[in-house]
Image (cartoon, rainbow, N blue to C red):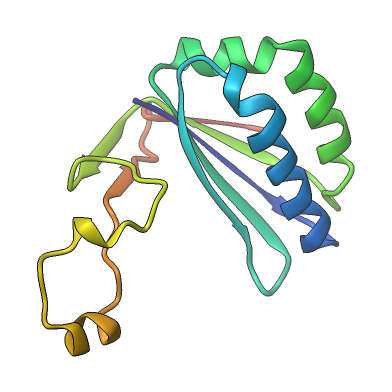
Amino acid sequence: MFVQVIQGRVSDATKVRQGIDDWMTRLAPGADGWLGSTSGVTDDGTCIAVVRFDSAEAAQRNSGRAQQGEWWSGMSKLFSGDVTFHDCSEVVTARAGGSDDSDPSHEPALPRRRRARRPRVARRRLARHLPGGCRRRS
C-alpha cells in the first residue's frame, strides 16, 4: 500500500467538500489502484486528506491523468497557502487495513443499549513518516 497525505489551509470548507465530492463522483471510477480516501477540514481551516493506493506507481499514474490535473487546478485555488504532500511508501495497517464505511458489522456483537454509546472502531492504517518512508513535497 502507498499513502499520500495532503495538507494545507483553506478558506472555504464547504467548497473543499464539494471539490472532494466531485472527485469521488467523476474521477474515482477511473483511478486505477485507488483504494480509498479519508479527508476533512478542521475548525481552524486545515484540510487533511489521506489517500490510499495499491502502489506508488498507481498514485503516479493517477497524478498524470488529464482529468486529475484539471480537477487539481480548480481545487488548488481553494488553498490559502502552500499545500504539502507526504508520499508514504511505508504503511502499517491494523484490523485489516483501510475502510471507507462505518459498517457496524465490523464491531463485535454488543447489547443494543451499549452499542449505541460505544464509539465505532474503524479499521486503522498508519503511514510512517520516517526517513525513506515518506517524502515531503510542496
